[in-house]
Each structure stands twice: as structure tokens, then as C-alpha cells.
Image (tube, one colour):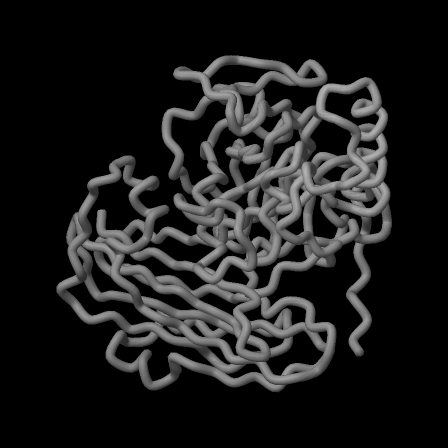
Length: 390
């Protein structure tokens, strides 16, 4: 068993509402009307019965039936456009369309509603981060807490590596609430824009990505309602929890050549074992977020006319000096790279270097690479690189 690395807790951020995980009781197909102890509908005794049910939910977890049908908020940060909150999520959960960045702008000068939703962070410069959050529950959510974090480029998100940017609050209507236009609202005096059951809120703290990673850090947003839709303080898995969203995307805008060398942490491992890390080229037209980036749902990208050279270097201890693969002749780089690596993981922190390059890219050409880490045949983390001709 590996001891988690030391971390400095962020004051007043995630250690609410409790130190133990929320309960996860089983819920069958029963409805409230199936309870034989329920008084006649609309009778005076029904109020006391309902209050008792609410107290039981707060104490023991949901009891009325399927979670989505209870009179509770059901918060969601999407991992993809069609995400309805079902978990575990089996797709590339690190490409959330609900995390936005407005680069080069201090948060106080940034608009409440960004003009574009596919911005890329600028290194060593002010950036404003936004979250688009949803309530699919039958009850509204009040004082919903929204927390913004950044991580070094990684294939395994965990609380130990989290760096808080800032936090804020919003109010959300139930899933039947819908406004035709974005409307400005306030929660605890903090402004945001809402359409009823979903809202866009900006982080009230400016984010300045580190230059050492060239701005390619990962972003994570967590949402929770402490009483009725809580989230454990140490939970950062977007694949396992609908209240967490993750954006691990690096965009390389280039003509000749297009290349990137990126060190990816493998993340904290609770127990020693074997991990599989792979890199896979995919069709750029299949990446939903890339269409957000260029601002067109109907955008079409051409495959590069020149060959792609991409792969992984063997895992090394974190902090080891990376090899500058991009300095080698392009026809020699592929001999050093592999599309798949098996890593014997102990308790020491490990890093794996990704290289990708194309000799020349024309405008309109794009290539997407997805890197995945699997442990026990389960994807525990991923990172996406986009080479985009300019």
C-alpha cells in the first residue's frame, strides 16, 4: 500500500460538508406511493410523513426510488455533449465541453458570458476559467458550490496533486426550468448567467499557468450541494462522478513543423501493480471539443498530407530531464518511440514523455492523439493532443 504524497490543503475549500463519503444505498424501482405507511394523499398527516422521508434521506441517503426521480437536485458537469450523468462514463472523459478558458484576460475584466467556448490557455499570462453546470433533478439547487482546479499534465487525477484556483456559488432551477435567453443572476452576491436549470459561471480568481508546461496544464471543476447532492472532498474522478469535469487538452497551432514534447505524470498509485499506457491517433472530425475550439459545429478537418510521428518514451522518475526529441531529424524520431508501454508501478511518482510531430501542416488540416492509462483494464486517466494547421 502506497502512502499518498504530502499536500498542503487549500483553506476553506473542499473539506465540506463532511470527512466521510456520502452514503450510497441501493435504490429499487419503488415509488413514494408504494409506502404502506403513507397517509391518504393531501391529508394533514401527509406533511409529517414527507418531512420524515426528507430527514431519512439526509441521514441514510435516497429512499424514494431512482435518484433522478426524487425531489432532489441532480448536479452534472458533462464529459461530452450527450452526457446525461450516467456513470461510470466510458468515453474520453477528459474532454469536457463544460470547462471554458478566456486567454489573456484577468477575471475582473472577463465577461460573464464568454464569446467563444474553445479558448486555449496562455502560459505565464492571466486567464479566466468558466464552468457550465447543469441540474437534472426535480428540485432546485441553492448555493451550489463550484470549485476550479489545475493540475500538471497527468494521466491520473487525484486530490494529492490538486491546485485550487478559486471557488464560487450559483443557484440552479430544477430540470423543468428553462429560459430562452441567458439572464444575469446572483448567488451570495456573485454574478453569473443562467437559463434556469443550467448556468455559466466564471472563476473569481485569475489563473496564470506555469510557463514550464507551456500552458498545457489540466483543468478540473467540481460542483456540489453540501446537503442534498454532496461530493467527497477527495473525489476528483470525472469518469466515476457526474459532479466532476476534466479538460486535459493541448492544442499545437503550427504550420512547419508541428511538434510537441510533453511530460505526463502517471498519477498517484494506491497499490503497486502494472499499468498500460497507449497513444492512439484518431480522426479529428470525431472530436467534439475541437469544433468548439474553431467555433463551428459543422467544421470539417482534413487529414495531414505528411506522415505523423508519435509515441511514448519509457517511464522515468518524476523530475528526470526529458529528451528533446524534437531536436532530432524527423526521420529518426520514430525509432525512439512506442505506441504502447507497460509500466511496473510502485509507490514512486513516474512520468512518461509523449512526442508528436508532423513535418508540415496546411491550414484546415488537423490530427488528434489520445493517450490513455489503464490499470486492471480500466481507463484511469487520459490526455488529448491536437496538432492543428494554421
